[in-house]
Image (cartoon, rainbow, N blue to C red; front, side, top):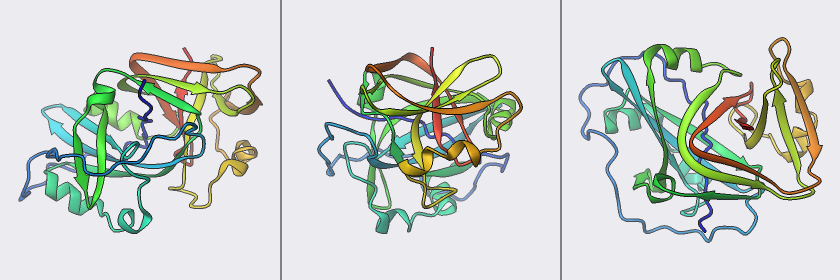
Length: 245
């Protein structure tokens, strides 16, 4: 059994606005490297730090989006992460945009992956190695619509997120009664975001009409399984939630 992430995708994803194709790049796409970094996977992922890099490539009327994650390789060293520049990486990889998605912290206790989610290539971003864990393919109109909080996006991955008994979970509920369970919180909008702040997060969110935020303590273990497509949203602070199916 392999423990990992995905993400999460993150998915602020996307500050991918229609910026046009970057020219004069030295490398087309993200090259793979041999994994030389390793970090023992924690028995409990709850509140474990990670980061993602999300390059976006233009393919006709679509965007191909690759999600790279530090899990099992390193804990996203701050001294290296703060040196990464989106525009520099965009030019290096001939990407329309490169989203720097982090630092982030897991809220679940374990994650299990299969297929491409555990066998993705390893890439190097400024000395931080990451594994490709998810991909997206979106039409232009889908990208524009998805670049807002509380708008659902679809991520291709196969995972099970496990939340242990007695764990506090954080949920968004839409007007239809659909529940989205937080998988990670971010220190992107609020650099001081932490688990304690999540308890009162509802009062800080600019929730759409009919939406609500709640916290609860699990009376039994909860497994959130995805076999191919995960439905993801983010809130105003780029905290990421997955739809409970």
